[in-house]
Amino acid sequence: GNSVTQMEGPVTLSEEAFLTINCTYTATGYPSLFWYVQYPGEGLQLLLKATKADDKGSNKGFEATYRKETTSFHLEKGSVQVSDSAVYFCALNAGGTSYGKLTFGQGTILTVHP
Amino acid sequence: NAGVTQTPKFQVLKTGQSMTLQCAQDMNHEYMSWYRQDPGMGLRLIHYSVGAGITDQGEVPNGYNVSRSTTEDFPLRLLSAAPSQTSVYFCASSYSMLPGLEQYFGPGTRLTVT
Image 1 (cartoon, helix red, strand yellow):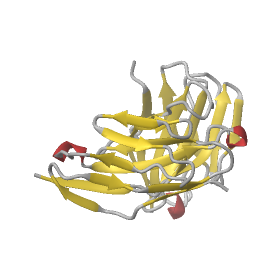
Image 2 (tube, each protein chain N blue to C red):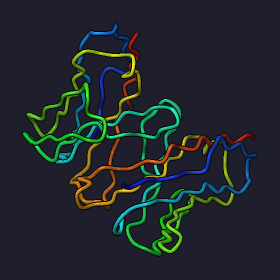
Image 3 (cartoon, one colour):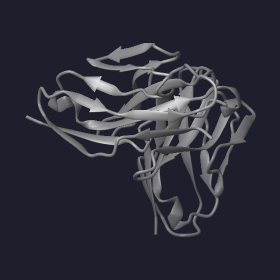
Image 4 (cartoon, rainbow over the protein chains, first blue to last red):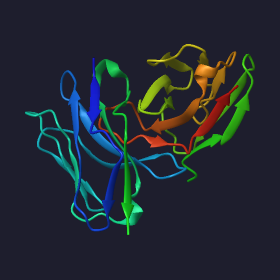
């Protein structure tokens, strides 16, 4: 079946530090890949996505590249801010008979200190 | 647009009670779904709908019922609440179930079953 594995958290960084959150996946075919972010007390919102191999998704200074050879979609940001503190979820949609289902990783809690 | 709205935000039930979690969207989306979020497990799909009158089970459907009488509304019914249903519930919607599309999430309902 399909699955997503994220690096264990929580992750604690100082402001302006470099961020990497690792994400690897298992899926048949060619899934679409997503990073969703959940700010405290809120629902999930899309941060970025990539729909085919070698695509790079980017938004708000965050980037992730769809690497089919390593089945990875690692999230990076060059300089984090306190306002980036949130829970980050990697997810895939395998299409076909998955009927729109998003398969999520377990989430990574990020805390950024001033 | 209000986007995806959910009510209530918080609910406490006793074991055996029933209730309905409400979800509505004003984006004319055909695809709607319900997820539950548990610590360390990401989000898991309960039920989904690809249009009015059409619903199907996700990966954890036991103990839950859904119906879709209109495009806008997709309520989730707990038939006889159990402590294992203590969770945060999110409703999501998308224009269709195509894999590359963004899914929009509501703010969630935090349910505690005692």
